[in-house]
Image 1 (cartoon, rainbow, N blue to C red):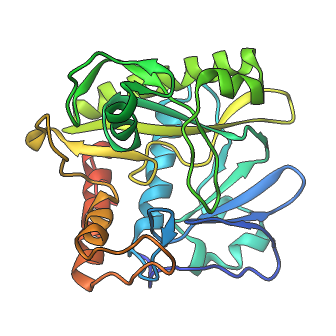
Image 2: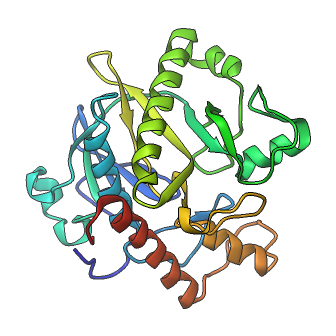
Length: 299
């Protein structure tokens, strides 16, 4: 389903806006439910570009729905529905703006950590390894190269930042925030989610180099998976066909936008530059291709 136009920011006067993040607008529906709207905003280096990426919000929502259903046997999740027609009237009144990019979800008490799993050495993990030989307290073998697959995936938590930069932390630091039992549970579920998704994606031609999960505790005390899951915004997706150790990889995620900003020598200070139309269009194409490869159908 194609959006009429990119959605950069929503204003739903009859719902209370709780948070406007880098990509998502979150509204209160009632005491038990939230509405999460995935806009077409894109952030790079923790700054939101003024140029929307057409259909991006649809891809994030549809992929999350796919993974929530596929991985629900590992841990329950917060999704109630992505169908506007099954949502309350107050949401259906805005159907033209929200259709295809909205999730009605259960409220939770969110754990203030990102549960990052890395199967390959890239990004901030690669930078940390170059400096210390470690990633978030994990001592890794000497001599690893950029984008190299790790012997086994590692759990590397990070602090959550709505507007700034997430900071890698150790499991010990995470336990000091959420407790040892919760840390053990989140590590176990995160690694299982990553492994099953990674095995599946590899069969569809995509390497999931790393990803991040978020969890919360619902009103019944259960720990459940929340937010988005295994999307091009929260993961590094690499095409297997062109994968080569020792260099940066082609990707289906927003690395294409980061690479453009690096080429123009942006100093990473706000405001973020606009994107040329061809860069925005190519980014949309990458997001859609990732969806089609993983799900096996066009969006």
